[in-house]
Length: 285
Ligand code: PLP
Image (cartoon, rainbow, N blue to C red; front, side, top):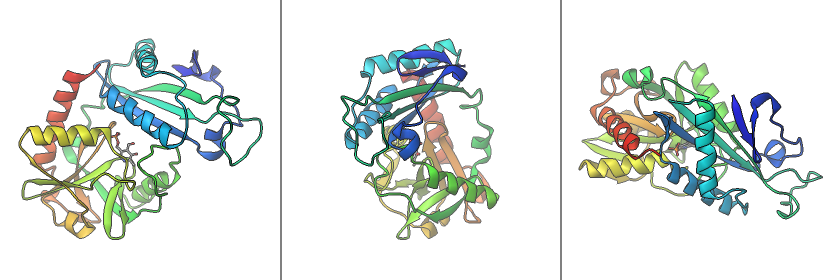
């Protein structure tokens, strides 16, 4: 596999990053995951815009322009022959000579940028989407700026492990009794035909898939309400689902042991998945 590191396309085993890189030492970095369908990028502009915002919030400069970033994405897709899959992008604050909590001078320490592809032949034709996934809920013990897409992913990883140990697929995070989002996705419930999802704030990542799905839902005359919901409300909902760049729209059929919709994916989630895949394929670049 060919990867991209700081200006070079290299075989993955030749790519190198310094041990002093603040991404490695301090999780001082941001990332994006963009899906690839039929060899094309889904919502590249949305991901690029969020990346610029994440960098800005952390006072980091982008090492490349948006046009250059698009060219790198396309080059990696071509070199690795990716038809269905995704591209991971990470920018970290680079490698100052010494470890220090204060940010280094960007003139002296340029940021690092890394991209690689993952081949996922079943990304759109995911068998899990036909069955739906089961989730548990856990305390949201992450930091307070979840709107910045940083690489500090230890707690979400722990959440995935808690789910795995509980014999389910994923976990939803709960703060003050209300669901924030999933470990690596946004969370939704459907009640009486209305789609309910938490409003955007520092508490959740502003999902690129979320923005597209809410737009498509409104265009399809579906009702959308952006507000907090509790775990009990979710368990009593008609259906539930998650969204992310790697799962698109994924039905949820069980929450903390309570079955939704008779344990089958609900019609709203199924329809939104179809619309999302169709519309985003049309707009892919
Ligand atoms: N929320 C969290 C915490 C995430 O990590 C992700 C994706 O990684 C999402 C939501 C979904 O965001 P997107 O739709 O942009 O992939």
